[in-house]
Length: 291
Length: 291
Image (cartoon, rainbow over all chains, first blue to last red; front, top):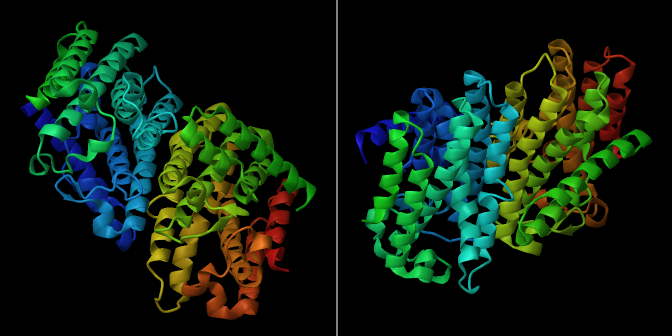
């Protein structure tokens, strides 16, 4: 993690801490919310959003609310994925999963509250920047579609109910383009829209983020096999009953695939100029996660 | 249910059916979503929104998306409330609860998808009407606050964790103003904002809806005691371990209280003119639910 990413991550962490502090939640809900908002994370979706915004000339501080919103949506999906009815996970970000610490009821309510509040943050951030080329409705719709019944939520539903199915590249791509890819692409796209990026540049950014998101998911699959819980802060070997790229292609094949996707993402932004340097660094960082 | 409400409810039901039909959800999620979107309901929040909009001169058809969104948020909260980790309910709207029919995982994902999609509908409805006196951010924030960690979600968290506490009017008011009241008031307020209602008139509408929402909750508590599952379409006697107004004041005392609240709500809109007739009918309908 280089200085650029550390600095952007610190901005997002600060925004999340402020949100936790100001949340007018009753005491019973404030504790799980605070844990969900402040437990350590890579903040890769928020940093991606800021890097895209900066490539279009927008200061990263001006995207702090929307970047925090992307991380809250991601945290929300992790809490739900970890539930007994879903992955039944014990460990997340180096701590007991939220439902094990606070009970299933409060974990579910906290997850829904995080997603819900993120829409207020996106609307607030849009109103503050008021980009001419994009309407607030377009920005909201972008997030709704990424999260929704053809986005992250769809990916999780298909993933949960595909266990035991035959291994198949197309099915895996359908799952991951939704489960991880949709929010990756939306984070990048919303960063560009808030920064008043042109539709043409946004198109390139979307190709970049789509390939990077898939590369990120594949490196996650690899780390689930070769990593340790201490290193990753979450359960490993959870994918034993599930389709993964590692199962289809082996560890080396999956590494080759994620390398290719990272290269494709780099090619998509080759002409975006010097402001896009952090985007290039981000792609290289994802590619090198398993090295 | 008079002709006015039947006609408005039909508009909302049609909007919900269209949303279910157009939802680009994978098959596994489409079934529970369809059930949640089309199972019969009173649609009182959506009708309230339309009645408020009409009192400010807005055609009800023009509020169909936002009214459907209110009903989707309400349906989402019912699915979550019914989960084993929460109320563990068997019956809802005359059918098995969603998690009993489709499993907990898909019920949770469907509930989150309903809430999520509602933000897209509210933004779309705002963009179509573009009311001059209110910004889209104000409208979105109104919904976020009503649903969120100081709204419906907070009410549910406090309610679940107040079982066995001593009976206390203040605690009950805190729970119900959030659990039922917040979305009632938001449905009314958003209807007014989308119809470009003046801030002064909106203030009166909010007092109307706050009192009506509490009256509605109290009549729900009464029906839980005196109703039958066949009549109500949901479990009865579920409140045996929980604070209710009936426990505090008895059935007759609770009826008296809901009557008073209905009168207060009527007084708040006394000067709104002939277009507010449906609002008056709605208050009387709520008051007379237990008669």
